Every structure is written in structure tokens, then in C-alpha cells.
Image (tube, rainbow, N blue to C red; front, top):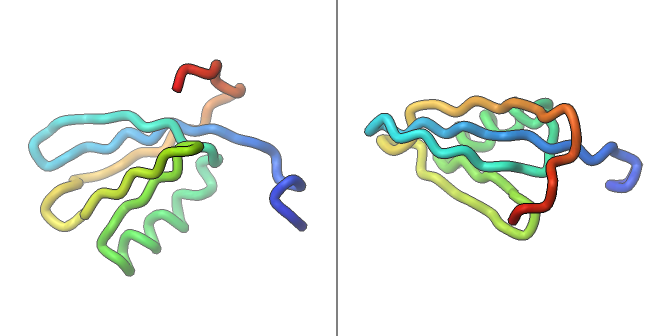
Length: 80
């Protein structure tokens, strides 16, 4: 299988920082990526979110309290 064999999915990731601030990031992946993100963050100490042409990285030690991934039902309108 190659990348074009997978359906294009989008999710919102709510990142809760230790100070209580919540930021939402839209990623181009389904909620099924959660185990991979958790494993990667555990191994590297950095949560990395790929958002189309953007990438966000957060050191989780002392910076990120938790994150939640919610898969969107349809493709979002282009706003970025």
C-alpha cells in the first residue's frame, strides 16, 4: 500500500498545557494515529503534530499536561 491508498482524514488535537491553556491544532490524520503519537512522545519526550505544510513540536516534560484527538466527520474547509 502506498500513501494514496489511505483515505484522507483530518482531526483536531486539543493540547492542554500545564498552565491550563488549551490550543487546538488540525492535523491531516485520523484519530487512529493516537497510539503512534503517544509512543513517539514517550520515546522522544516531544509531541509532534503534522498539520499539512506545518509541523508543531512540544516538549512534553513539564510543558504539556494532556492531549485529545477528535477525528472530523468530513474534510474541513481550507482556512490555513
